[in-house]
Length: 195
Image 1 (cartoon, rainbow, N blue to C red):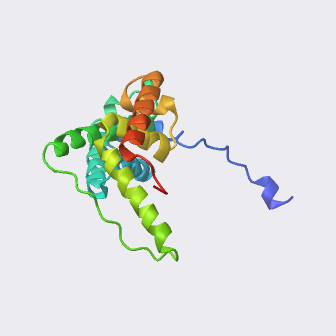
Image 2: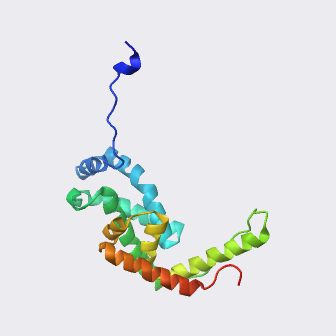
Image 3: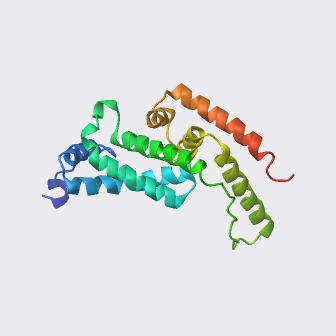
């Protein structure tokens, strides 16, 4: 008998299907389960927060607070209301929106100069740098919920339903947020390229 044919083949596990079980263990105070949960949620949460805030240090702070809330509020998670990932994204987005409201009233937004590129074509590098700076400046002028919706849709590739869950709204409202954000970005950025 061949050794490979005698070993049982494990059933495929859908990505994220173990997360509700980990959440139940976290709710009972299991630190090892929390560590496993952090490993799965931290990087996606950091990408989302970074794209929403446009500030890596602020994004790291937001994710730490979100993970802390995940630990302290694990018993409030209800699998009937959505996935663990969706619940965590909602926490991250809400913290980002809160942070943007607080920071907006305190700190003026300055454009960050791009560093020189090693690209062989200086003109293309300058145009790319200009596009990035103009987009970043325009994104800062959007309403926080519009910016979050754009970050989730274009940056994270999330569906309308997932974004709606994270923003606690409807997919139709998300379509409206994205549409208004795109129109406003186009007006703020103006023509890009050969002007």
